[in-house]
Amino acid sequence: MTSLVPEPALKSFLEEATARYEAALRSEAGLRAEAYLTTERGLSEDSVRSLRLGYVENPLPGHESAHGYISVPYLTRAGVVSVRFRRLGDGEGPKYRSVPGDPPRIYNANALLVPSDYIAICEGEFDTAITQQVGIPAVGIAGVSAWKDFFARCFKGYKAVYILADADDKGQGMEFAEKVAPQISNARISPMPAGHDVNSFFLEQGGAALLDRLEIKR
Image 1 (cartoon, rainbow, N blue to C red):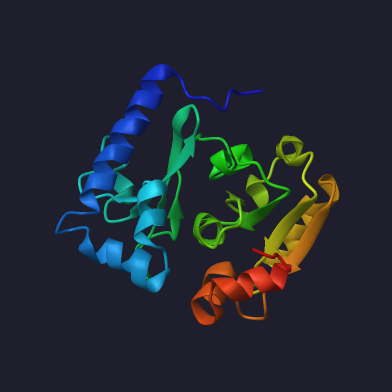
Image 2: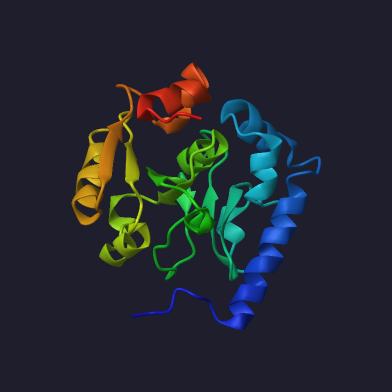
């Protein structure tokens, strides 16, 4: 199996890219991206900073196609192991871009290191960020095809593993949840209301409503 830990030279490149794009989010060119994250997505400044989200103003070699996109680094205790890119709003180009050949990974894997009886699995990085922001340890998978069976090992020992299923698509959210749930002990599929993903539900109802939906007492 291909190692999920990049070679030292690639790790150094990924750190350089993350730092550059992170700084650009605070530049004049990155103001629209920062507003998109905080106003349209509801992320707090602390979430944006801790997840090291950024803006691709001056792309490094290999990232040229992501110019003008938001950068979403995959952070682990080993450092930055990958960077994906999200289109800013409803602009031109694919909604998401990944580096060709990069294997599927768990987003926000550091949440697996947090002592907790429960954890959430979300479909997508921003849903993960919002879930984490309201106080639920959360990881993300970039779609149905990005789930790998060996990921299930990471969720052993939890009393509850909430799989937050989007309901703003054509059934892909439940397809994702129903693929993952049988592989994990104590999995609980938690569908969002019709027409919503986690992010839109949070924006409409607030963090307390998400906690209530999962019946998590804080």
